[in-house]
Image 1: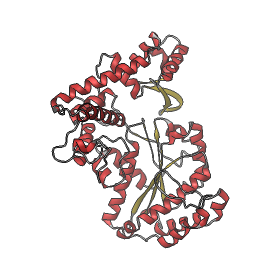
Image 2: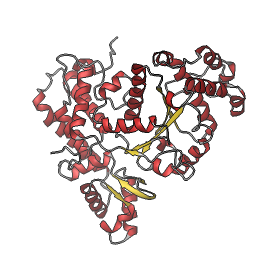
Image 3: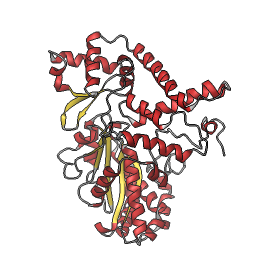
Image 4: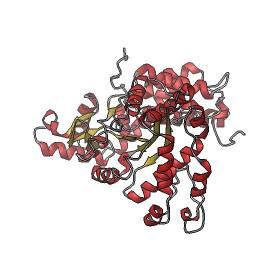
Length: 439
């Protein structure tokens, strides 16, 4: 059934080809993930070698969650195809919370649901099959209903939580899940359920993240038949790995921007996947290059701006019943449209002092990232650097993060809005491309 409110059928697409949502951990995500084969292999080896649990770290919008999800899906697919008694099964990603009891309950329910959903995969992989009837009886038990008498569900961000921590522990459900894990995965060679803790940065501070992980160490990270993957933005995972956790979690696998050719291929794959013959792409791959570079190689934000430009084209041409622009003229329209957005963003930040603008421009020319301790590169006095960072941060033109090479130090980064403002200040020149195949 066609969505009457979607703009995409008018362009010849079934769905939004510029969606910046995470790629699904299924066949579709497998087809659409490009340019990450090396990192996928590294992550799969860290999961499959059954040592310390792997971690993944990188800037927001770099594609961490998509990579982890697709990598785990490919591991399960390989186990099913080989049918050799080894299977790795991804469990829906968990969002870390400061409530250890609530998180623990979500994990056990998530594992149970994944066991039930993937019964056929266990069978085809030559594994012991989970006892679905027994797990279902636990999941439908009244102990796990909320105060209104409604059963908790899975998916859609909802988590099943027992009425209280004591009731959950006493219910016997965690023990039932552990028994199934031990039966289905009798040894390391049998594989594991892959539990993913995503967006670790959503915890308010690295201290919160560290405390949560430390409290979960003995309760969850040593569960039989499980492997864990921590995923978070730059610095948060490095800093959360305290001394108590360094032997539990590996040093982060750090992701950088997609190479130039891979970013364009990502768009090309999506246009082919969702578009039929004769589909009209408001932002074809050659024009997407412009957005990707202007936003300093942030794939998620480049996709978001491609969608916004598509909406502008729809309003300007389809709604007004004008003939769509010829493909060769789209580049010029896109550049003019982004310049208008850059002008508006700059006007919103006009209160920034001249000296702080000089620092901002210099930082952008140096790649958009610096350690706060490198103040001598930009200022004669350290307090001046702190004042400039605070001023730009308040205008959303700069963000602070943790230095992934030294968790005790801070770094400053220009976010996408900042790069949009720099596009204005640089007289609409694109930042230098740092990808290895830029030439």
